[in-house]
Image 1: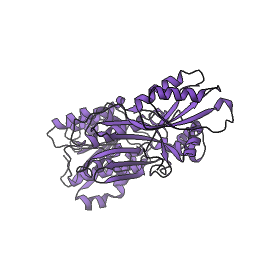
Image 2: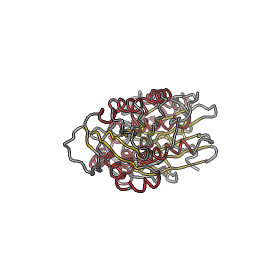
Image 3: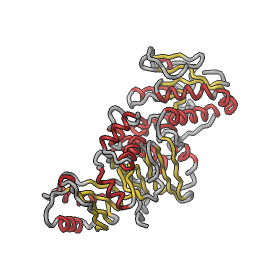
Image 4: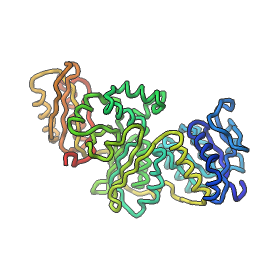
Length: 434
């Protein structure tokens, strides 16, 4: 091991976040020593291509390596920092590092969401005193993980809702505020680096679902299979939806939501949601993230900040590294497990958008379908039709179970005047009109 007055790092990944970590440590080395009593040193950075130019300066004594074993088998390295991404090699690196007595700091939400039970079991079996830290895995620079580990231990979380993907929030802001189409918004997000070459994980809601799963474990002690969480992205949204949202007095956000019912059961979903203009989440624009936690003691706590990017994400990794240098310990990094039951159903007010071919009796048929499945209609909205091919009207329901709504949608889609699949989204607050 390294000297007792030094904590030595090996970083897997020399890209955006890895470079940010090296940069911050170099700039604040003396401050970290004063704060922790230890020197924090980067010994090795593992990359795919050692000849590739880097946009950060290597500190004295640090080397670039290309083999994982250069870090894993180096007994001088105390902490493995995994910022390489992916769920295959990254998992091997994390597991091997822990087994070899190295604490791990990671920003990999996909890995944690996929293999949380296995990681937890491994940590429970080890007696070498290693720590597992992952603040940067959810919402980049927002310290939500540590808050869930420490600030709610005497509380009961009843509801969580969050804008937890910066790419999609940037796109929805562009579609709402700047009147861009979906394709125009995605193109702009790609040019600015918010969207990956393949944006499916972002626009499909899957990135947000991984983060929601981790937050649910911390809040409720439950391990939920990601595939059990209803997940809908933003690909079906159109300008028409924003026009109707504006008519109702609000906007649309992609949210991850989890709620505990009166029986103590938890439901969850990722979906576009209608949010009123006076809601705290409605004014969170661009690539910014925000999470609201509603609990018994603290009532409502809202966290807002940068959910991605070099320095926000690196900052969270640094906070974990500094905590290790201080000697902080957390034997249960995912909080205690519970027997809380997950139910794949929830109740909400819903917004529906129906594209149609003009025909007599459309509203009557919609009313009959809703009545059949015990779904009450709150209101029907229709803007003047400029183009026949874009003809659409919107319905807002009263509060109804998601399972009942799906039956309504299936029956409406089967009607001869309905063009394509009906679009739907939950309304975030039950008291959305008050």
